[in-house]
Length: 499
Image (cartoon, rainbow, N blue to C red; front, side, top):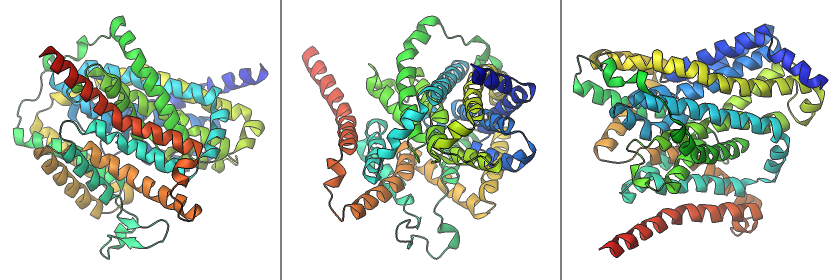
């Protein structure tokens, strides 16, 4: 009881509350600006935390992290430009809802879903974090290989009607993921003698170009001189009724579990959680064909899944000292700056600090309902009312600035424009972009894991299936592949019976 009182007093102090509120607003702004991301913001923040109290510094990290993960949904819904890589899946149904005049409804669903996913993740961190963290000790290269394969199997759900084009797009993503130094042998691959390619193609640069530039080009083609009216946006009329909220509960629960599970696994991330949550929602839907055309459950699944990864990624970071993603690694850096050693002893030596940070992750998730909803509907959504001829140069400048500050290289701007032109052509030829991204993210993970597993087993491929956890994930992967085929077979049988 004394510990809880100490934690509550520290978290609810004026400095901590101000840090969480201000950082949450800043996080929404960062997520809403294409090219900027929470990793960049937190990395710039870390040097400033030297003179801060540890809990205030961690409160700012929590606010920026949760706020920016929701903020990425704002341009994804309004302009089909994901503010963060994890918001890519949000564009699939969020932007079609905007085209139907349901932008406010989509933003409200994203706000609620982000808050619920983040809250579920924070509760998992607070209650079962140490127990779940121990389970990851049993994961080896074989398990990570099947996790990557499970993620890529979701391509079968995302490709739409033309499976061949979807597979070709996935292969393109896999090829892009091979550029750079081979992590196991150190041999350069597809670098063409260019030193800047040794580190591979920057994921954020590719994603900004692939997803942000095509809609900007399309906007330029429209030569819009008027912009949308306030009536067209209908931002003041969005209300989620209790019936709709009840209908979203299964999607929120499913996506929360997926996001938490993905977050616990080091090296996965919110983008994978969003894709898997979206795929699961589409597979479970009675009308899977409506996904990609403005189904609200698509927005809810993607946003809940990617936010449920947030606090869960801290579980292995705090309990084992193993960062679940880049942001978790930066949190470890913040702890080390203040002389705190992450790992199992952290819970015993600094329980008030760990408990306070967990509480801050929960509070900043709930703050999304306050600052996120207001910011989205009253400020950021109004950008749609600007004429297209003004939006195009503004977005291009934001993209260029955001991409340049990642690595400080002009060549990244050329990579962004090349990826954007490629994305534009792929869309014109009706190729889906989601498999490209999934192949780029999961391809290197699958390759490195399977090679490590074969090295450990001395070339015995049966090791990939004989380990119990690997076998379970392999069966789940097979089920994910067969499920859409089974649903299609059932639909054909019903159609034949009606005829």
